[in-house]
Figure 1 (cartoon, rainbow, N blue to C red):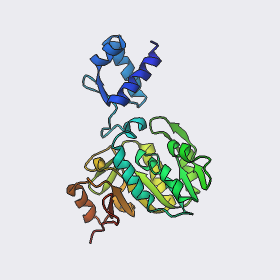
Figure 2 (figure 1 turned 135 degrees about the vertical axis):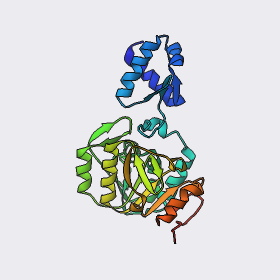
Figure 3 (figure 1 turned 90 degrees about the vertical axis):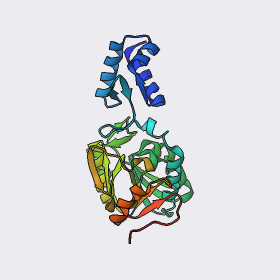
Figure 4 (figure 1 turned 45 degrees about the vertical axis):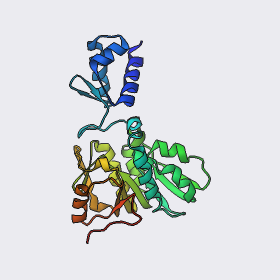
Length: 261
């Protein structure tokens, strides 16, 4: 097997399992542990995985965000429920911004029932779902494509956003600590911040697993959003900091937001 084919197979394995040991990978592909280490070094350098003691992982950490293909399979039922809650905030005829996240991406099929709409996005999955659909005016943000995040980023995308205005923006983040949002990647944060500036109303979509987690870079305070949308399983410990900060919380088991007094 050619090295590039083996590395792709290594990624396929990690996308399926989340993590694997060097010994298991060496046995699976019939190569030495040293060869696997070299493969993992190259894949880590490309930002596709993180080496851990005795193996490799594609799961998120404070410094590493997992591949989009892995994230879109995790907590799918909750993400769909959050997406449905978010879609209920949109009215036909509006202009909406959708970011690169898998949670926000789950909104795309639901938008077909809300036409006509104008959708601005850097999310390739959203583009593929909505491209050519009657009643959808799709504005795709240019920039440099990231396979890991399945979206477009960089100066070109940010400059395009500066010229656009929307009724609402729907964003996600990889970690929420207290009443603040964090993310591992600076470039991802930059475009999310511009999306906030380009929209009149802003909503954060985050499954309950995002709460109480840390990531390297500060994104924004949750008070930048009109509401935070999450699953019914969000803990009371996660709710309290939001209530203290006056942040509206909408959960999938409620029809209205909870606003701190």
